[in-house]
Image (spheres, rainbow, N blue to C red):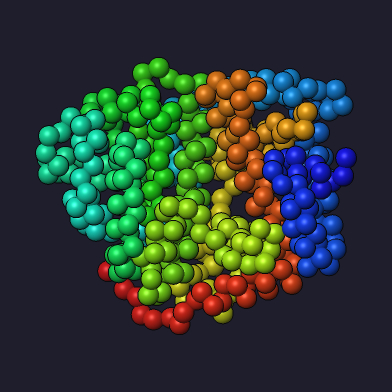
Amino acid sequence: MTMTRVLCELFGAFEPLAFRRGLERLEAASGHESTDIRLTTEVERGVRQKLRELGLDPSDTTGEELYSALEEQVKRDDDRLAATLIRKYGSADALPTRISKAIADLPVPQSCFALKTPVGKRLLQKLPPKQTMKALGYRSFDSMIRREPLLALFATAWLLEANNWRKQILDSYKRLHASDFEIRRLSVLTPDSARWHKLAETVVARKQHNIIGLKEFGAVVILPFPAAMPSAPALTALLIVLHEMNEVRAASTYLKLCQVKPDFGRHVQVAIADEPMVATGLLDGAVPWQVIQRYCARFKDRFRTDLFEPHIQKEDLVWHSVEKALSFIDPTITFWHHTGSLAYTSNHQPVSLNVIDAALNCCNRLPYAHRIAHYFRSNLWHELMIRYLKHDAIEQTVVDALEPELVEASEISYS
């Protein structure tokens, strides 16, 4: 099996020929240094090492056996993490609050470019979330907005309101200006009243999750867990929060870059509704902004002062490894180091070793046939693009695509 075929299977490429041609263009632009082959070889080597750590034979292991072993690893690490959170932060608080405290203690930058609270309140007043009001037991919007945290209301509304409400909110973002935003610390909210516990039961039953990232507000909201706790709740929740933090910070940097554009509101809408892309001639024609963020975070010496300053500083372009952040909170959890881009191929389909995929598979009790590999595929894709960007010719292609999007600096007030 060729290395390109391996990558096609790992990515689940629906059009293998187009995928191969895209890789050929990247290889040609990078001087034919076999970046794709090097990455594939590292993935296969890393998978063999992790199989041995699980006590499995790399030459004689089925996908089902690996899936079961990963599930047991998740459960063990969840027990460790739950005990650590209680030891560090006490048992009086609910699990979401303990997770919030652990996040606050992480040694990672947590400032962001976020929508001002009064502006968010005005937006919500114009479009009251009626389903959210009903779920929380309020008859009056004014009563609800006085008593409940604004960001928790926004998070719940995104889950419970009809598509038309979400569309109207996104349309309202097009009218926002950079002056509607401010620099503040990323927040992790954990509403915990009886009303929120009752609402969370409804949300989890409908949506199967209780964690929502709000890119525009620089926040992550953890709703209360349902009475019937899922498998591995502490580990899964912490991992999703860590992931959402990266998403929020990347969107924040993108919006800071766009803050002097005349159509700033449109960029807000794009950043919230979808992943911002930088149009290039690479592979499928565009590079996700998150790839650029991760690239600059890894190779700080490649930071282009002429391109990004004064709006973006080097410290804005950060990206924390979810596995490393997990190990900072509990140093005994080490198995998942360097597994973000790893998957074992079984019957031409991947079994993801990415810790978020593994935790979600366990948490949702997904059978082997219905396993997910979303986070692995996203991480592997980003890793492949980052490695190609390291080549000067390809980096310059992205810079050339990005430069016309930038405008001259002007004075911006964050007051």
